[in-house]
Image 1 (cartoon, one colour):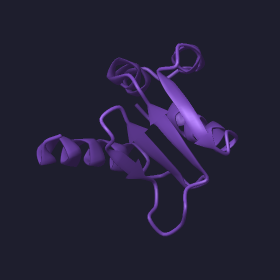
Image 2: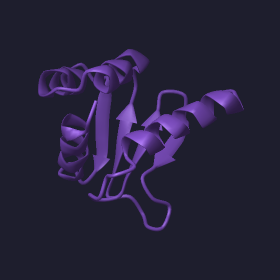
Image 3: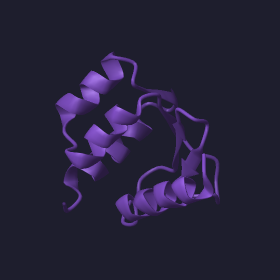
Length: 97
């Protein structure tokens, strides 16, 4: 991945989760790049994104159906405390557009 791509991803995620106050989590992308909501502590869970289209869909128009379908189709997965993901999902679903 080019550094500009990593920088752009990081800026987007930093913006999406700027007001997030739930459990610390990490996201691991299909290309191995990782982002963490905090580097101060070990994450409670890691969200694995295997399909870039699923991520685009969840960011553009987050809803429970898209999230469920991405999980069922193995486009995303979770390592660690699966309950951590509920806080992440709630934040995304309730954030201002």
